[in-house]
Image 1 (cartoon, helix red, strand yellow):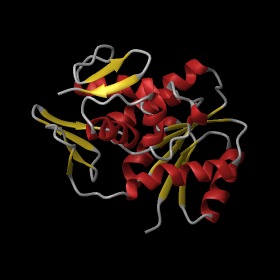
Image 2 (cartoon, helix red, strand yellow):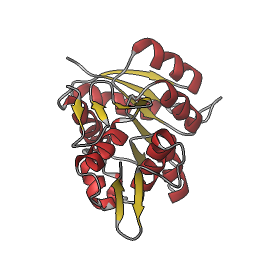
Image 3 (cartoon, rainbow, N blue to C red):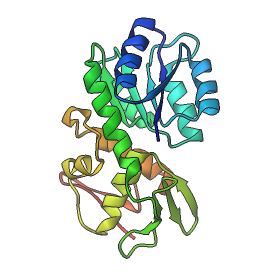
Image 4 (tube, rainbow, N blue to C red):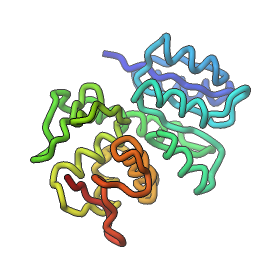
Length: 225
């Protein structure tokens, strides 16, 4: 089945370059030139992945990402001219799955789209995480917990699945980064910290002091019952 990519970008030349390369690789591509139009298209066209610019007219791309993430676990790749570490972390904390800066290689964008989508092709049957009470539903990217279901992004799902696979074992940032298949972040290990904060906010309701996702200072993270 052909995958649909939504590009939310106000620079027409960039839209055309991305569309040409993605279509040449077999994707169906739709586009929007501002945030509000992008939100409407995300809700109406049901894309499989979004390529999102940050500096958009009318509504900032970070806000678009935040709004989409409240509604859907759809993968989001941020494409932007903002290069700073603070912007990268903010984008990841908002819920993006990858972050590519301009100027960029269209071939690299296509490769990252494939990498992020590859995870969605994994086994979609619900699975129990080791001996924990966490039930992982890969079909809907949800963690089913005794107190309710939690919607996750694909990256958050893979990180949580890794942590829950061996409760009590410490996983380094590098190991968690590798577990989030397809997410390169240019070996940007601190990106994991942003996803851990998001997971804690959803599971522990405290992004800094997790009861279940615990920091092993200087080593990494572990899952605790």
